[in-house]
Length: 175
Length: 175
DNA sequence: GACATAAGTGAGTAGTCACTTACAATGCGG
DNA sequence: CCGCATTGTAAGTGACTACTCACTTATGTC
Image (cartoon, rainbow over all chains, first blue to last red; front, side, top):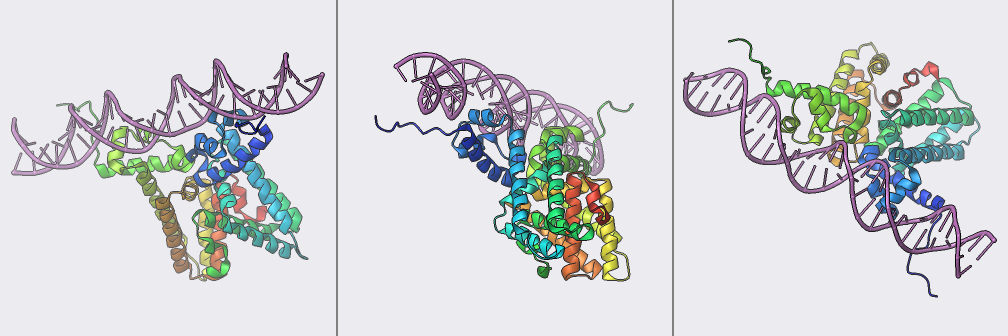
């Protein structure tokens, strides 16, 4: 007859994406152990029980968040890798990374991934992710050795600048 | 008469130092929310109740640990600040920082401090600590601007290298 | 040896945690 | 319109959490 009063159903895949978005934000701010699955479920608008049906365990959910975070970082670099020389391309990617400071969430998420590495499974995700990004940046830029090292060093400073909310640390001229 | 079967008592100050040492290790590995006060008390050999008499709250204990960690970092830099030019002194301090990778605990503790910055009081400790170290390194080395920026960038990369246990990231030639 | 003070604890409290079980509503292919 | 897989949940479970209170024991001092 009329529209049923009950909510339209989503596919499990849609729900998973909703939950991932919510969980990524929560984990980014409070970390693996500082975030409760209950609060994630609540903000995602599903029952606590269903969250576990969708993701199995809290750790698996955290890892899924970490992986989308690493993926988004890769995409940011790919989109920014423009320039005629390796150094120009690195600078361009570096600029894109600095811009992430405006919306700190992705950087905070990376911090929380590193901080949760006492868990071996999570450490493995972090290591693999770091290597993947390093290899991709090497490929995209054509740079290596000391230039690449400096690029990532600056990147990690920016990541930490995000966590203590001192974005000025990202620009060398402020030092 | 003979030695009493009960344990000799320490002063509260001695106990505080014992607890700080234990708590620093635990927090370094599992973070603020991943470490339980119960386990700290147990490993320090005191009752759970007494831990709270000594430190008030878990957060205060965490902050006390963070502060000794920052202090130890400062001392490491002071001890290493040798050389004839600013760059030489920076290099010497940088070398000392790389050596910390051998015993990761101090670096892990810094990571956990950054990761716990969603708590405003803790963030304030982290910011003040970072600034204090930056000012001290500037003073000790006489360097500034881009050189100082690069020094800290490399430092943060080393810190993260510790957390994902890839110490080779600390040496530029491995890139 | 009595007294004050400081060190130290057993046994809680109220609440939160990740995770489960048993069941209900929905909507699609036949 | 029926059968059935899928989406979804209410109501738990036991273990663990930070923190407290009432209390005991040791130690230095007069």
